[in-house]
Image (cartoon, rainbow, N blue to C red):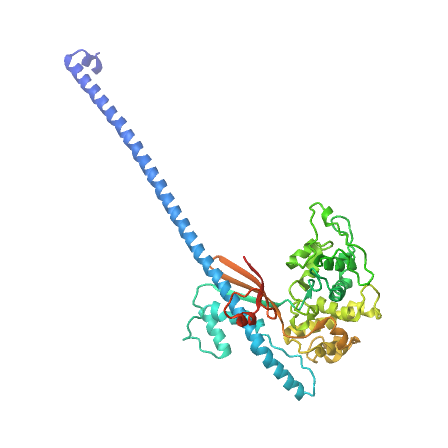
Length: 463
């Protein structure tokens, strides 16, 4: 039986058909090969275009984000600068207008109350965050603040005009212990003694016994007197170790140059409070405990070295306890005449009341402070939850003359202003120290008097 293939091979016609089929197959195979190359070229071109478009899109997105960040950074910077200038304006208002008015009001009230001090003061700088809301808040915040002060802000221009936020915190530096006082190239021993009394009294509280009884990383213990002495010696130029005794305590030998990372003592004024970390004995624990009550900016031209009680804010109870002890203990190296002055249970409740009262209404004189210390039972109203406790406390025998050796009450002079500006995801912060009593060392302004009235800049940092 013949198959089709056999029959096709056996005739000329079949051979022709077969040749035609072979040609067709080869032609199709050639076309398929060409189609595969075209597909490969097309896929390659599409891949290249996708990569180019992706890169363009990514670059555009990055450029847009960078432009937005640059815009927000500029806005945040100038919001912080604006908050700083508004804060300086508040300081000027406080010094030029509020302080004289409050002095007159206190005199009138004292005359009406037969000379009794009412302990009332007003600090517009305490309301800086709320007042800055007029300029850095949103429309609803501005309207709310306007309602509080009785002002229609609907037609006002320039309020909450810039997208973003700004804030300011104004505190006082002269309500702290100035560790620069008495130091420098020409040390003043009398001033150093005042600082030594203040530092020793601050360290004296039994609540710090654990700090002074725990060895540091090198196995060394720190003595209260040695720590106060080391802080003073760092800021003076002489090589004589400070001693409250006129005979001295020998040469300074703190061995800063023998440490693993050696350095030399500054032997001049502290530049910043952070420099205290280099003083022997001031490890992280001591810095956390004591640095909130220390400053390097409060010395005035007379360098009284005293602490302004009108400027004490926040957690000032340990500082007030130290001030009371410094006033009653002229020589911290000797036991006090009245050992009960070292009893925290007796001093701390009185200092706590003073601290809260100072933060709420302030002080107008040292007599107000003396009144709380000597007569705690009459210093609180019956509505105060601590009234009964104060009835069981005995007062402290302290005079205004004693307290005036280490403290005073007066208008704040040195301000620490911390402002922030926020726009989008960018936040800028400026920290400045302003001294309202110091003259311009190198005036570059056409209105030096106005510049001084707003506080001469002693320190400036942007971050």
